[in-house]
Length: 297
Length: 287
Figure (cartoon, rainbow over the protein chains, first blue to last red):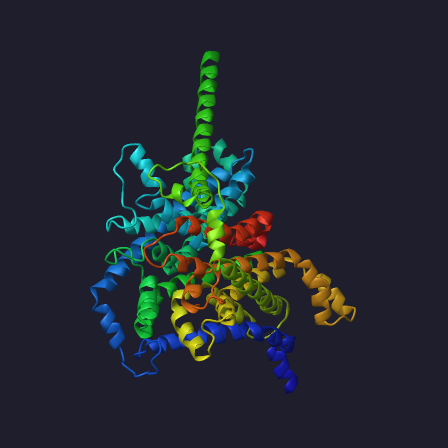
């Protein structure tokens, strides 16, 4: 009887579970438990420094959905995420295709183009804020070549695009390096065969490169979409979400409500409203990541 | 006939040349796009304040000075750096301990629930901090962990541990189990095999894991901003942000702080470039 039980638990169950204890403490103690209390927050009326946890039902959700600001912020976040992800993919793809060619100094160029990803987001964004300032470098250059200065950081029509541009600068190397790794795994013979058949470079790209890179591209895009939608640093540092919420993003909005205004429940509710988006992406990503690691085995 | 062929050859050579020029120009633009902000960060940090705010901007500094750095260090910046260093090293160390044990168990040992735990680990890696920072703040407030280095390390473990575990799992899969099994047959215990055979073999992956956890923790911004208030806890990201509160931007000092804050991670990356890049690619197992 006991033997059977051990067999069911697996050969190394004792050591296995022992080794997993610290990981499970992190996963359940520091992620799942707080996350679930966060869900609970959205049905309560919690504020910083106030010990009160009255149950309010769906009131927080109703309040938020009745705010026009919320819908503006959601729209900003959708634009921010989709444009940033798309442009990062395009520039990352171009960089990767160029780096996949043989030329002298290729490794140095790759190293340089990768730098933005290694920098702390804070220092990179601060530097851009200084460059894009009304009296910053870019506006000085525009002035010298005879273009009227542009208010990148305070004109309501520009702010969201400024935040997007800086996010693209910082995030592109991740695409580049992963697509490059994907390109390098495509056997050269395929291209040679296509060339003999007279396929042009553009046709080769659409009919060979893109289909073979499909999984890599999907994974990079999904992963980056999660990170991008989740980021608040760019908007926080560059514009603070303003003016008039024109560059406010969902995570920064949650931050503002919960931490600056102390309304933990409102903040948590704002954050939770985009959970379905994360769940869908996470579902497909886990599937893809597992498929990939199984293939290698 | 022959004239046609040589004409075609010429055309081909011209096209090739145009292509080369196109590649070079595009790469040049990309390089400038990446390097100009970094150049400007460094140059601004070396200018005297008067020159930074002058109407005419000089691409090359007229006068190089370290005053911005001196002013920065007169504030608490060294303390912030020290806090960052303590938090990031502790995070990297704990993360390595936790993830190496877990990844070994998940790839090499046999027990029920293995697959499920691997999946949960990935799910937690994908878990966005936006869903976590508010309840974590509430949770840590109750435990008196807000505004403490311990709290910062614990918060950083939520993303470094699942990532490191996933990365080490990929690596363990790529080294054959036969070596270790031979040792086990010879009567070595699992722990001895782990210490004497598996860890030495996994050394490159372990180095990457440490660098990654350290960098992620060093660069982290949201938790630093939310969880720290006191000077002796604030990492440099929170400390530097503290300098911009209000309408006055001390750009010289901010850029000096940015240079110093970026330096450790850039140096780590340049020194370990090959490993770091292979660790980042999603199909890292291939290397």
